[in-house]
Image 1 (cartoon, one colour):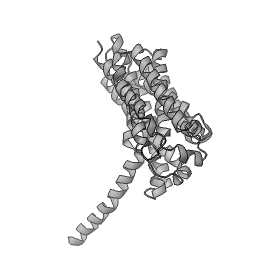
Image 2 (cartoon, helix red, strand yellow; image 1 turned 60 degrees about the vertical axis):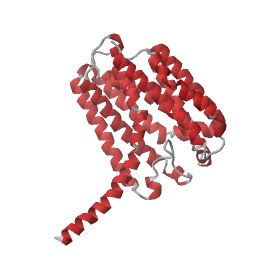
Image 3 (spheres, one colour; image 1 turned 90 degrees about the horizontal axis):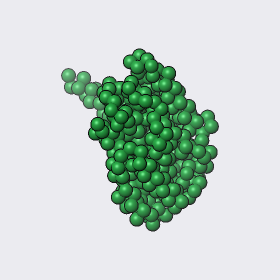
Image 4 (cartoon, helix red, strand yellow; image 1 turned 120 degrees about the vertical axis):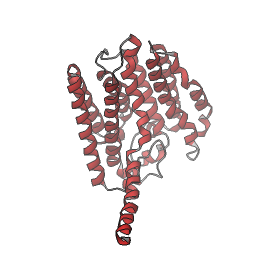
Length: 307
């Protein structure tokens, strides 16, 4: 009995670090960059008197979870060399570093990526069966998400050549809300141009903000992220300006609730002097990175409450 118990404890002791490594690799906090954009699309019809299908909302969010898993695992695989030259990860950037630390191998991440891709396909098929009139649109969104992911960190590797921020902006600002709306059978799709414009601008602002902590490391690795190209101070100003523009457009398009982040962005502006010091830079960047998400989430909530 003692031997069996000891063997079980040993297996548990080995499994726990592996589980922690997978949690690190999947970066659950990054789901905050996807779910609010999906919810805006899912609840957008509510402002026009359409009922909300909770099954469709759940499917769209599950689609987002699978897409998120594919994104973070693919990015870790594509950024391994750059991560080895990085001075460390932050809450916002730098990858999970599970490959650099040896917590997981590239083959494990590749298998995880395949599982996430298969899950994305399964959810798309489920949605197509439930909402056959939207089947082509859901499949198109799934294929577009895969193409954007491939172009971002693999193949053309636009995150290294410049332009990756536009791929992310299109992904979160167009694909995600369209998925949310497509799984609501009464919704009009595509959404209003002003809705897409506001979400794309906020997505672009978020990508620029999250590139700021790694500006020097990215430049050293020849990864031309926005902050590596523009410089930290200019990237900060661009992200701040785009956040304000996106928030204003969202308030005009949907609801004054989108102004929720105005105090956050005002605080960010007051911290602009910190961006030259890497050790304190995050205090200035956090409001920019989370301000846009707060705007989108407030927008989704305002849609839910609409009559």
